[in-house]
Image (tube, rainbow over the protein chains, first blue to last red):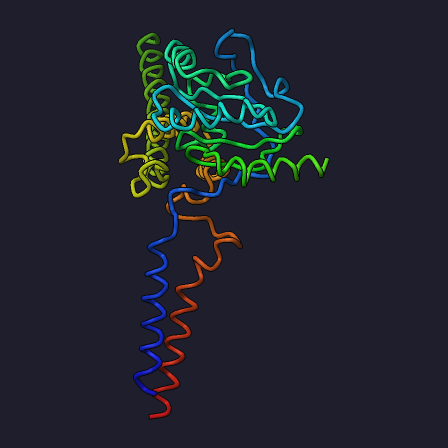
Length: 174
Length: 124
């Protein structure tokens, strides 16, 4: 009995540390979920027209942060193209810390699934949205409340199994 | 003679103002240097933004500099960062209900262990 209790504590500790190895520390839950999108006054990437929070769609939509220098975004692009074809959700892009010509060239090579793109050259909007690993995607409802965030590339599975059910839930609620 | 006096007074006044400005600048630098060592680089998570050369770290450093120059204090800067990037961005998390176990857990653990050993030594 004397040896047993320290032994139990020891094993418990080892177990905690062992399972700690498998905790995903790279994706951090955003504190912005449930909050309103921050205000911004930027321009649209292609036209150079003013773009602000009031021009966003009046329905749930995806807000996708991308850049031409981001390799993972190329992989994600085919998924975004599918989502655009599916026509259930509009996608607004945030072109993050990118050169305008590079971004436009990128879109002409890979196709443009975006309704339009917000041109965030300085990265201030990205900073306000807590962006640290492009690509990142936000699901925003018609009241401009951030409902979910995904860090890294979206896959077809994530779209079908997580995003679509969430959008249906949002639509039922309204 | 009066002109010389005025000149000296003006000189003293200017140096006092200068010293004041220098002290202010120094205070700002201290706050800046302290802040950038306490904010985590989210891209390379075991470095702070003072150590990291990741583009995001550079952006955050510039943001801290900007806020320090605007005269914001430590709480404001930390709040600004954790509002956007969660408490994880702060090397020293705030003492909030959510972080209570983080702060008090070790003391609780120490208490339980010492209680256990205390009881055991009594039995002997």
